[in-house]
Image 1 (cartoon, rainbow, N blue to C red):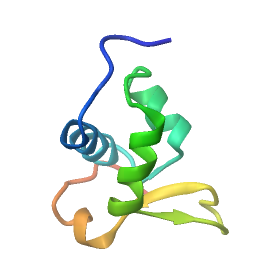
Image 2: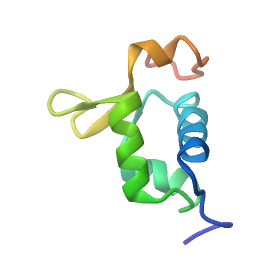
Image 3: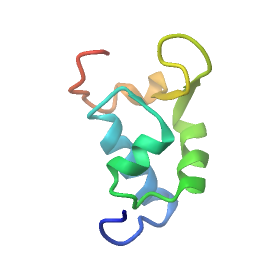
Image 4: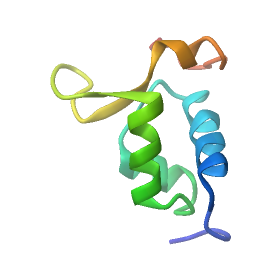
Length: 82
């Protein structure tokens, strides 16, 4: 269910992703889209995640994205798992 207009434009999608990553360290694409109220476009979200985040293929956070180190310092996370 979509709550509001879609988020369009790479800068807007990137800003929303940084906002969400400031709340939690690890995300799946599905959870990011759900947390945005269904407003993030999946294709563009995945493209931007490849630039700003690392994908965990194994381990405890398998199939989850984590913000790259160079971006973590620019946002304050409120998650205790960091």
